Amino acid sequence: MNNGQLATINAYNNSARQFAEKIATLSNYNECYDYLAQRLRTGNSIRELACGPGNISKYLSSRLELNVTGFDLSGARLDIARENMPNGRFENRSIIDSREVDNE
Image (cartoon, rainbow, N blue to C red; front, side, top):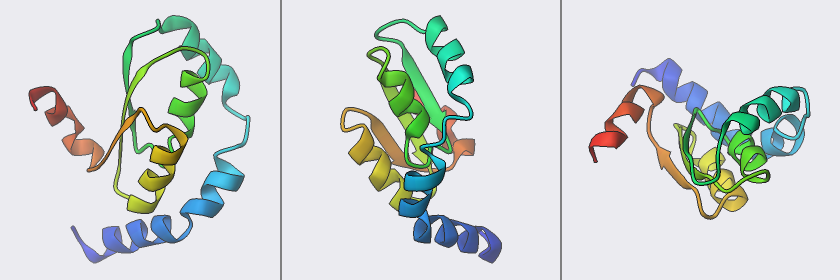
């Protein structure tokens, strides 16, 4: 990982709580999330790539029971995702590596 990427992850870690409280609570995309939720079924597995605090998974899971796996490089945002969705699986890994989960 290069210095630019590390600086970005650091910035995400430092702003995790503010992001979760201010940005992740906006309802701008709820209509899109509702559209997606209508196409899912209870028990479906979903992956939230670059999940941050897990706000999308949390929103979808408030409508139906899902098996959630989220990936992000910000440990601080993943901590919040785990608080938001204790039954979810959240991993500190790049979305580029997320395809490897099927093989584990």
